[in-house]
Image 1: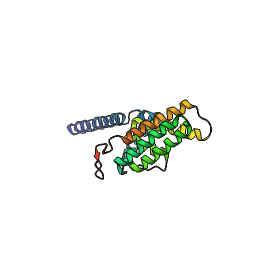
Image 2: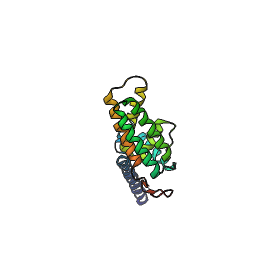
Image 3: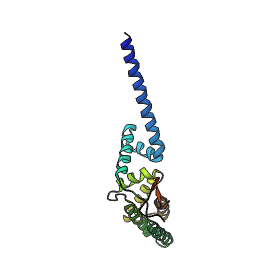
Image 4: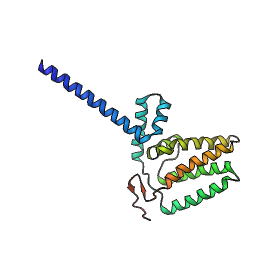
Length: 186
């Protein structure tokens, strides 16, 4: 009888520990991904699928060689971004197209795979979840404007959203997520 009670207690303790671990891991993912967690949950409708998706993103991202842009590249992109913003006044649609292409080049140079937009947005969500949704929205506007006229306010919002991604790709050129870039120290 004592052995049965011991086994039941051990099983219950293990179940409680597993439950606590899963709750802690869920809370960590919610905190890490913030609004991206909520967007993914809303899209899938299933908490377990959301957790699998976010863990999969983390694992994929860990295998990538993402690195900060060199100081020279960052300065070149800053200048290009500044010109793009000035061009927005006269040609907002072209500015959105240029912003989409600029972000693509920046991400490629930083080591993100860029062949598939959805994967690209998922990859950026691991490092910068606060801008991933902005990037998705801006890209939708860029695509929409190739199919016909888009309201100038939507174009302005798209450029603002791209700006958020440009800013995070340019911040701390010597450091990204605590990893020092040993290739160039400037």
